[in-house]
Amino acid sequence: MEYSDRLKKLPVQFFASLVEKVNKAKAEGRDIINLGQGNPDQPTPAHIVRALQSAAEDPEMHQYSPFRGLQELKNAAAEFYQREYGVEIDPNTEVAILFGTKTGLVELPMCLLNEGELMLLPDPGYPDYLSGAVLANVQYELFPLKAENQFLPDYEAIPSGQVEAAKLMYLNYPNNPTGATADLAFFEETVAFAKEHNISILHDFAYGAIGFDGKKPTSFLQAEGAKDIGVEMYTLSKTYNMAGWRVGFAVGNAKIISALNLIQDHLYVSLFPAIQKAAVAALTEEQQCVEELVSRYENRRNALMDVCHSIGWNAEAPTGSFFAWLPVPNGFTSEEFADFLLEKADVAVAAGKGFGEYGEGYVRVGLLVDEERLVEAIERIGKTEVFK
Ligand SMILES: Cc1ncc(COP(=O)(O)O)c(C=O)c1O
Image 1 (cartoon, rainbow, N blue to C red):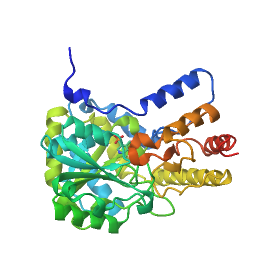
Image 2 (image 1 turned 180 degrees about the vertical axis):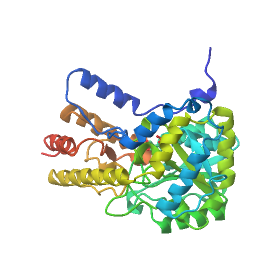
Image 3 (image 1 turned 45 degrees about the horizontal axis):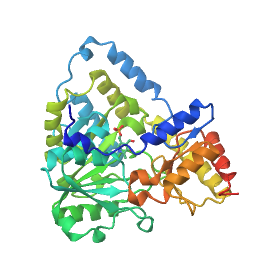
Image 4 (image 1 turned 30 degrees about the vertical axis):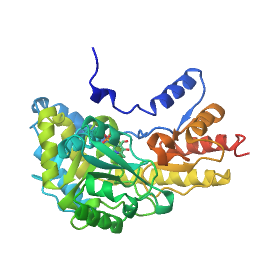
């Protein structure tokens, strides 16, 4: 039996080998501090767990969900956007419930592009964007995110042939992996660019809650006209530490939302209704848990930047997300440096190259362990010959 060409073309998981190396080192009894992953370390807030528990007791919740999800959850998503971003969303036509946003990101090229058509993706970027392009059998071109542009795309620099041919573009701020954020002016520029060239936009707002220094991240939908050309995807994975629950949603342009709902009618019967009920609780009940989480990440970020500075590892502090993007010292590739840190300091980081060519020269460090462990990790790195 042969697999399909489509499956064979799927990108190889760059970080699988990191996971293997970390597991091997741990099996040898070494005390590895793993800063390489993106899995939130805190538990889901108790009131959300309780909402799941009580919903799971209700036999009605054991039946199939309505095809496109519970109306209550769509209403909650609309209420959330109004409350958090002042953005008006019609819960009936402008919300699609997703099994985590990863599925939505992967489905969208299949919804909007014919085989061989072109989409534009950020480099560095979240690796699963490529999976969607390959599964839909479409072409993609990468546009660079450079430090000199605060890791925002330079639309002028994208070759005009690509701009004219592209039908879809993905953006993600606060950004994984760079920790950069975008402001309203950038999203307004994006809307103008997209309208001029007839490109649909997906803004991946996975880290929408996580902004530092008192600056709440900007929603793409806050830009005037954004809904005319795009959607934003929001996940509960990060804001409410619900990564394992698999729940998120897309909001925005009704035609794109309708396409996502249509493809999902054929793939799923929406999520376990009890999880949808718990998601309603997350989005509409107390939000103090989110404030506490963001200040926890901010404290970790500050501790990380201080200790990096103290060993002479100078880097820009991230303004959002739970990642820091740290420069690789001279003489190493990002992969070599990640291997070196694992070998010499028992610290795992993600090599920037795994996020694309323009990720070379950096490693990504997650703020996903306690402050003490984070500081210990960098102190260990400070004792290696590179920083001594
Ligand atoms: C940038 C980005 N987008 C999307 C996701 C997917 O999130 P989920 O599928 O849990 O909603 C992640 C998860 O790490 C991410 O970092």
